[in-house]
Amino acid sequence: MMSYHTTVLLHEGVEALNVKSDGVYLDVTFGGGGHSRLILEKLGADGKLLGFDQDADAKTNLLEDGRFTLCEANFRYLSNFLDLYGYSEVDGVLADLGVSGFQFDEAERGFSFRFEAELDMRMNQQQPLSAKTVLNEYPVEELKRIFKEYGETRFGGKLAYLILKARETQQISTIEDFVSLIEQAVPPQKQGSELAKIFQAVRIEVNDELGALKAMLEQSADRLASGGRLVVISYHSLEDRLVKYFMRSGNFSDTLDKDLYGNVNRPLDPVSGKAMVPSDEEIQQNPRSRSAKMRIAVKR
Ligand SMILES: C[S@@+](CC[C@H](N)C(=O)[O-])C[C@H]1O[C@@H](n2cnc3c(N)ncnc32)[C@H](O)[C@@H]1O
Image (cartoon, rainbow, N blue to C red; front, side, top):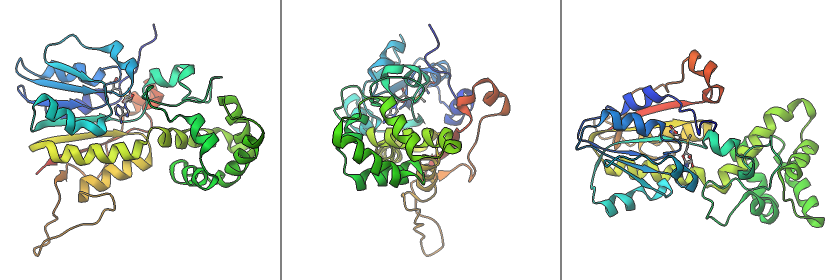
């Protein structure tokens, strides 16, 4: 079997957590369990690790370890799960956002434009909203907004209009249907990069990726113990911006709340103003790591 996922920034991500032997840690994007396995290696007998993944397929990687619990859930509910398991505080939260190599390479999950499959893109297979619903049922203005905001593409207006026309006669149901509309909306020399951006836009909408990220960041800041660490690896600028703003100012509009003495009032202190990126060697070995950016913050 091909590996489920090649972990990005494996050592750097776990180092950044500063694992304490008896600490409680969250890996909110369990996936293939690469980061989780290394965290468990660093934890002592009294340490605990809670993993989250909203994709039922991640269960195939379950770790047989008494210190580990997997929550098959969206990380936007992390506080509820901490209540459920009786942890008021945690010592570290690691998030490695986006989809796994497994999800991307599994044709029928519908994440990649390389395959012929039904339009899907759901990370959580139980959720009703799929890419098919978005493309066939969303009003045209919504589609334009999604392509512009989440895909940062200039061709969203034309594409939304072509979608509207196409669905008057027939459902847009396969990846091929969608790709052929994109090919009509985008000039040939731009299609490579635009396809990726437009697919990303639909995926972000289907999984409400930015909404879930915001909820997770706020709850993490709330539940981290003083000195505890938040480590987030993101793969596109929309996510990285939210992470950067939140770590710097405690909100998503990047509004700095300063006291009389000029001290910034925020729950976390960023460890550095600059994001950490994978080494050239890692990018060469795993090209999917090339867009990764890691940010670290410490709870006050
Ligand atoms: C990039 S992979 C993580 C890989 C993991 N670090 C490893 O080493 O194998 C991201 C995983 O997070 C999951 N995921 C993404 N967003 C999520 C969310 N909001 N809630 C729960 N799981 C999520 C995906 O289903 C996917 O399995």
